[in-house]
Image (cartoon, rainbow, N blue to C red):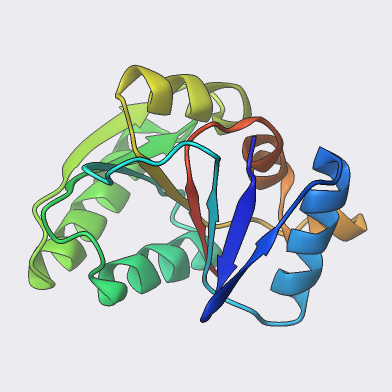
Length: 166
């Protein structure tokens, strides 16, 4: 469960419910505070970074911000797409890889035919990711509109730190 959200130069500690944490996080994002690094109680060295990439504008912006921050230069990167046609995934992954290489990273790639909402966290855990980089997609209701279903699910259930930006 996410315990701290690092924003700018400080952090917000949470002793409240998971729903309250997610609402507070949604408010920060809605107010334009980006990027956010949401972390758990467990300290960990960031050596393996999983980038969940859908090709959406939000997903691309998040990946770009993570790459530009250059925080974990020695980390192994893996870019993964979920539930897209194979040819679409291959094109997206090739473009994302090219972008990362142009900025000094050499990522691995993978495509998963199943939906991210039920497969992103198990995939990240199986790969032993230390950080998940993900954007969001806009939906109708307040939290879903701001964050998207998959981002909400991951924030509520992840034991892996999250890098969120839009």
